[in-house]
Image (cartoon, rainbow, N blue to C red; front, side, top):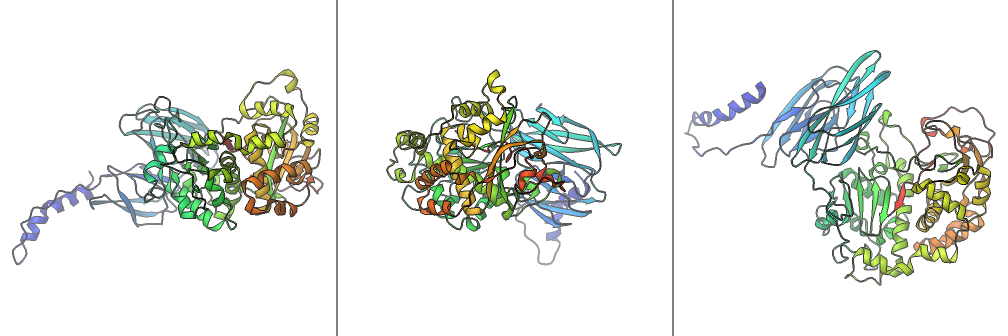
Length: 606
């Protein structure tokens, strides 16, 4: 206990005597017991530009009293994790539910040379990632656990992945990262509190530990059932529609408030961003109408990739699509997509991206730059994700069929009962894709199937002729019939509503580690393939079933014809298909390793 806290305790001991010494006697009523929070600074050498945490021994609400203004995602928890924007004296107050409070003050003078983010509370057994940033040139990165029950730790440069142990009570785990910076070793400490979490039950829908989630709106009439029915290690059967019905089973398009009453989040800012998006970036009401087909929306830091699941009737969104502030992004798990290495043995690849004005429509911000983003930057990627996942939901629960459902069924029973009316089944029967070869290759690229010698020998020109003559707008269409439907709807809506055009290309498979956009050579490609004759017919049919109020034929008529990409030019140089390749002043986001919008599909159906 420090001197300040000791004096404070002495003050409370003397208070009855002091009160009795004044004129008029005094109040002899016994003073109530108090339990002010005990506070601890996790980092003993805080530096400007770095990150620190204050820990209370009980749940508290935090308030900053002095110093340069800080931001945090957890002002209402026992652990307050913050960035220090500048040098100065910082002072905070922590107040518990009984109104007892304590204050903590510390001074920051030097700049941080290395800083790891972010201290946090995480359920035992779950996975997380930590990232460190430095000022200067760094080498010889080292990660180690310095305290607490053993976790599984793997570090790769500034990034570390952790599998927490299962614990029977809350446990502190301490980690340290260090690096040589300009020839001198610097280190930083990180605290992760593993909270008690129920392990997966036998037969649970989720067989790995999950991050804790809760209803975004605690006053929602569904608040008590959302997490247990949608994202729990104890979920062993689909919940009945009497407990959690589809959003528009009454036949009306849900309001934003009605949508938000079904949102479950691991961090409140995720729901805040979704609400603002629906209020300001849905002028046609597309997303509210499409959300009528779901029982709920789960957004969590540990969901990767995003998916729709007919067993629960919900969509599950990767929190990486909703962060707006750098400190929010710190809490999103960076575990790589499990499909990252699928298909690497093939001699071709197929890339995709959304473009606007001959540049990427999705803004990439390297984590090392720690930059914020606004809702305008967030919009294209989140819109694409929602159009895709909600196409899945409306495939399993078509608008016309939803009014026929019985509340006595579970979400899974209802989806099974509607199998004959499933839109992707109808699409496969009436307007099927022709290429069995691409279906077999897609199983390798997206599901990790083994490849044969003949498949590994296929060159880009053979793939180009097979794809160009069929009715798909993307390689991912061949993964499943469900993805075929979702891909067609997604591109049509993105192009017509957001004015972005989608590129798809058959390329070589660069034989370099972490290939970049300039390493891929285009053999064949198109921008805006959705208006290609065979593709257009299929996209029109899908959109008319899912969202007829949007008048899909009119939307398609306003889109330009496809633009061919230049064969022999790189994927990067094809950002402007009309130009002869020239040296470019490359931006980081255009020359990042090919990933989310170059190779993989973030959406995934379960």
